[in-house]
Image (tube, rainbow, N blue to C red; front, side):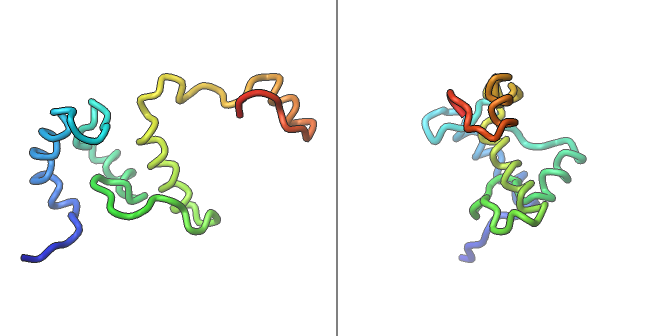
Length: 110
C-alpha cells in the first residue's frame, strides 16, 4: 500500500464518504454548507492559494512580504469564519478609528 497526500484528481472519489461523515454531525465541526467547489473560476482562485480541501499542511504565512502566502492565510481564515454573520462588519467603531488616527490605542474590543 502507498500512502500519499490527496490531489485534486482524488477529491471526487473522496467527497462521497467525506460528505457522509460531515453530514452525520458527529465529528469535527464542519459548516453544514461545506460543499464541493463546482465553479471553475472559484476553484482556480482557491487552488492558487493552496486551500483546496483536504489541507494537510499549515496555512500560516512564512514570509508576509509574499502576496500568495498572505492570501493563503486570508483564504484559510475566511473559510474558517465565513458563516459568521458579522464577517463583513467594520472592525472598529468610529471612536476607535479616531483614536487610531491620533496614534492612540482605542478602548474596547479590538
